[in-house]
Figure 1 (cartoon, rainbow, N blue to C red):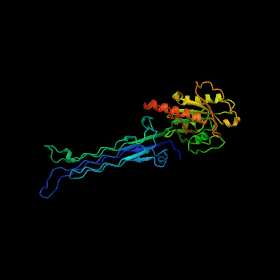
Figure 2: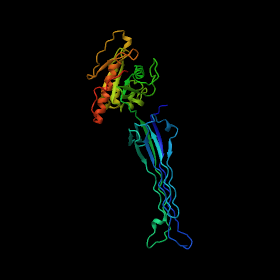
Figure 3: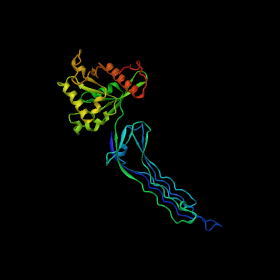
Figure 4: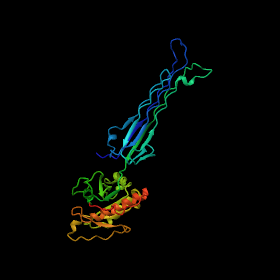
Length: 345
């Protein structure tokens, strides 16, 4: 089950109470104060785990509390620290305060850690209050209380290339052809109800992640259809691939409608490199021709492809790989290997 947004109530552990105690041993009937401090309460930690791909675990466990610190004891013994509560989340998880919407953290890399809440401090034992004028203090502090907070976890998939198109435009079929993924494929709209990821291999050792998102409809940015739930997953992609069915009567209008949905959701999405894939070219016969580039494509490359026959897939793969490599080189300041962009889909 793919869950990409959950609300979780978390509470850090309370601190243990300080101890009021006096040393009582044979031959020392009136020893000084020896009450130890209480232990600190447990923290709430967030840790990204590369083995996770969904937030489904929090659907069944929405209240998480760290352990309470142990109370101080005599003989200057400090109480144990409360057990930490670790929330393991997939890489790409954004953390916000559910009430205020305040941004708290963005766990992008694997094994990244963020301290969400610290536990209450342990109370001081009476040994802490001994002075030259008060050698037998009868005072000990109570432990600090834990802090409760309601947070919202939002998963934004980490993919290199995002497929954007209307329902039944051939996105899932393309994903299954370029990668080893096996998304549900059928000849009706909204076959894809959740994002699907596939690893596309090129060259001898390189690869990139391709994301098939549920089809958009006009008004998706306002909550219509399934788009509003999944448009956020496009934000982290390096490259966008618009898929348009070649047999549509008004493909230019479809292209502009898709761009408009992205623009209204987040204008910065239109700054990403993109290309157009005219899908289902096998329906045009043995000698298909590439349609004209739609207005507003800004010179973007267009590929006439067929996921059934394989027509045009090699050229598309080379272009996508090139864009991904260039973006990685730009971010990581690594040189581009011209021989890396090879391979069969």
